[in-house]
Image (cartoon, rainbow, N blue to C red; front, side):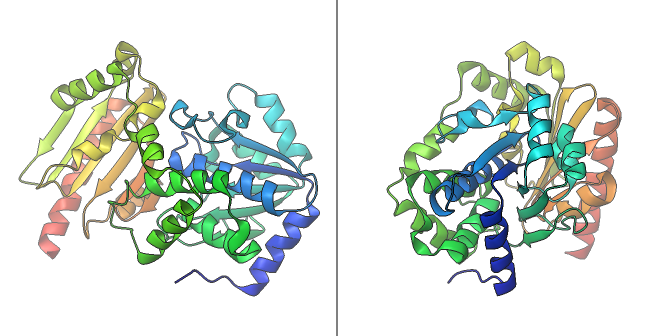
Amino acid sequence: MSLTFEKETIEEIQSMLTNANNIVLVSHTNADGDAVGSVLGMYHMLKKNVPGNKDITMILPNGCPFTFDFLPDSSLILNADNEPERCRAAFDTCALIIGVDFNVANRVGSLEQSLTNAKARKLLVDHHINPDTQLFNTIVSMPHIAATCELLFWLGTALWGKDMLDKNIATCLYNGIMTDTGSFAFSNNQPNVYEAAARLVEQGINATEIHNNVMNSWSVNRMRFLGFCLNQRMHIFEEDKFAYMVVKHEDMQRYNIKNAELETLVNYVMMMQNVLMGALVKEYDPNNIRISFRSKGNVDVQQLAARHYGGGGHRNASGATSTKDLATTVCEMESLMRQEMKKYRQQD
């Protein structure tokens, strides 16, 4: 099977790509594997399939996490925190902005104003709910798709045919699919995601090597940090079937841990048999607290994240930002999770 797109949408995107000589590719702050893979995958798709000498700038609000340094041309991604003027100038002078793997402007952090005020045409390719229809001229949004990288695979096929792939494109897109499905373990897997992955592997990529580069390349400090978090920072409520982990800024400094290295910690909370809802509270600094929610089965964390934090994502995996201090955030979040699990048990 394959995904289908409206003929008018494909023609509009083809026109946008053909007529724009200066293009900016951007994704969300604290980029994960799908965000990085989407930016790089789109970059390589444009380089291979769109005629003309296009000037393409890739930007991430706080740069590409070192975990993904192995991806082709990751070194070309600009870090808006380090080069704010250069990034603002790129938004001001480009003819087309392509946003990938985010749905609203505040997901791009410090780049929000540049994105909002840019006079360029704007295309969004994403798999989160409620995309900003006022901000973007053209939107390709499919929340039921496992990863934006998968959506880009099908969109690229619709735009340029089955020969649109090469090894660089396949490597980047596979990286995003693999990370956003938890190595094909999450519940958002559908037959089409396996078909897309198979087509990418046919390009000669080394799927095992990609997995090892992302999942099995931890430093000693990171491994010791995991042990510390499991022992000292995890809170388990067996009767209520939820658990969460809290990472303080001082913990990260003590173990010399970077923001990107927190990405998979929430998965350990969900490994317990009777835990149906989990969360990871990350205090990047006292003014930047993020929460990653996860769940199993029909437990819906997307609604919790959206209703109480203005966040969102998917039913079993969502994120949010807290505007309160760490202690207040944790206290309120625990109460909300307990309420959600109580309602779930009553409905079950």
